[in-house]
Amino acid sequence: MGFDQRQLEEKIANHWEEIEGKRRVVMIQCVGSRTPERPYCSRICCSLAVKNALKLKEKNPGTEVTILYRDIRTYGLMERYYTQARKEGITFIQYDLDSRPDLELEEVIFI
Image (cartoon, rainbow, N blue to C red; front, side):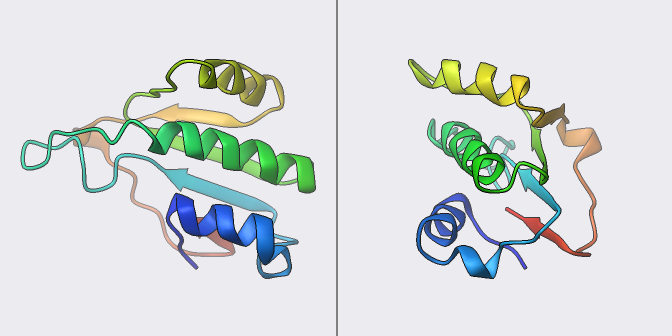
């Protein structure tokens, strides 16, 4: 099952039963961007990922949440949420274009 961040936000807010009970959630940031072909950054994805990760932990503290990222870019007041996420055990793993994530879908929500 895969969602983008906006879809996950909607599921958390209005359709929790569809993701409740998931033990592990992996979010992959910068998919399809920050490449030579598309070098842009949307400036909102990282902040939304951190917000969604915190909400997942709030609703189900036992969920393992991992965010795979190129560079975490949480602007302004969102930096506070990044710090809070790390304190709450959300795992952040950096990757580069030469070591992109290669994961298989097995009871994991890919975002």
